[in-house]
Image 1 (cartoon, rainbow, N blue to C red):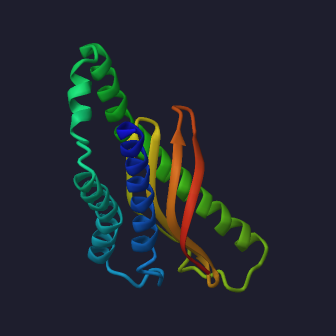
Image 2 (tube, one colour):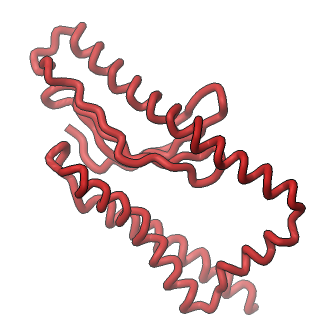
Length: 179
């Protein structure tokens, strides 16, 4: 019974963390009017607040997330090395691949609008920015990306990508703003 209660409490903690992420991620909604410093603070809050909430709930329910590290000590050393190398490999090659894929998508939208003769497309466009991108686990990358390809054709938000060496697949996204 005690184990079931702790498992349910951990699940509740994760759910509350996800909701805190959703709340914090919608705090800033105006595109391209924020400074780079403000966006860095925003991204840190979007990641830090849910982690703090999860840690706080873990302390309340007496769940020791650091106990996971004790379990990792029992794993073979070669397995830990392989996971660490895969994580570093994802940082080095997966994150740039995700940024390239997101930028290519925005440029393709711009070219399509330009070829269609859209009057709202100007020489000042497209504006494309990736503020943060990092691997959660090897091969799974979270990024905040936004683009404005025409006067009223833009998007900004969080995306979860699967990187599989030869390509990138967007798994899901959370729209923060759209125009």
